[in-house]
Length: 251
Length: 216
Image (tube, rainbow over all chains, first blue to last red; front, side, top):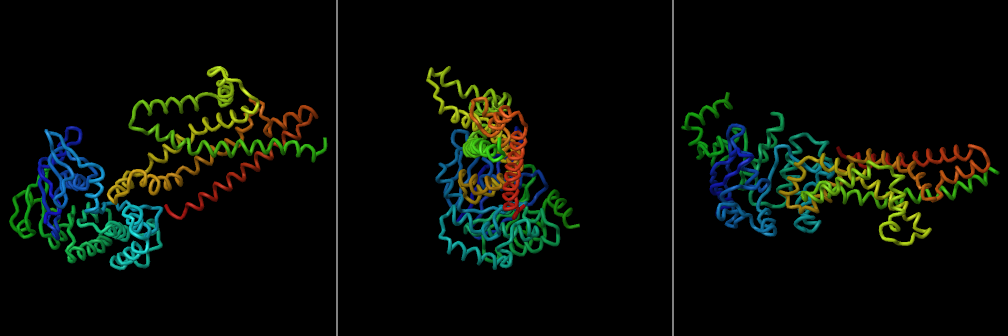
């Protein structure tokens, strides 16, 4: 089943076309990495997919349900109540975590299930504690975000997203704000999620990681998808520009 | 006059001072938040209106505002002004004035919040009101507390302006005794009272700041 489908998506910021006719569909269980130079539109694509930005053209749907579409040349979004339901399909992990600093680790993870999804407290607590163990944070549940390392904070933010049990998890450069030492622990968590067949779309600069983990890699440049394919296809015989880009990272 | 007698007379004024102080905070703190919403509204006429309101309230003397609030029912609506309206007018004018200052403090706090907090909340499914009440406001309160302390301390001393509407708060009482007995003792006593009152205010605000220092 197609979990995410974006067709002919366009996005313009002040006459600057950041996304030019992007089409992307992601199947259940697929792990898709998006790579490309900065300014290529990777993050904007993710922000459009997660509805943090409005698209100016094309369509966006989750599990066959339309969130946005084009009608007579303008883009229309589904009514608020429907969007609210559609949003439950996905979670997003930010580059700089954006944890709630005034909530403890446990509350960061539990609060949305309880106050947004109205999950009974006991059940939300059980869920949160399971996630804490899964992500190796069981001794941090009463800590506050400022007391954690970047890697721990990012793992909490992954737990926070998972607590709502999304079908798709988006990652926006999840390790870019971390020093190399802490990158590993976050990548490990993402790898474990991939092994558990979580559907994921990951914007990343970690080439080796993307290569090992992804079912498909997308190379973006100048607001378009320049190349896409399996890691073998992309790393094996890419066009010159892709080779040049990947080469820079493998030095 | 006996010292005890003087304190007793000052005491009555003291109660009025404390009443003005608490009632003003009670009304102006929430009102300020509402005004700050108007000030940040996407609706341009509303935004301009609140901007003018804040500008006038901050740009004219509170003493004049007290007089305007007191006399406007008569001049604008032709209503008869009763003596009991004097105290109400004081509270009304103080609340309207302080709300303007608080509104700007709230606005500063709200606008200083990183956009990532809103985006994280949005993706997690929090509604607009939930986001504000659960995520934004608690953090804003922590950020603006030092500015609120400043305004609150100013308010303690501003209460003496109630004299223009012949509301006998402590400073008025002290002046009356001072004039009658030709001594500055009551004025000094009043000064000591304001100082102690403000020590208590500062201590309380510090306590609040400490309470909220469990996170950064």
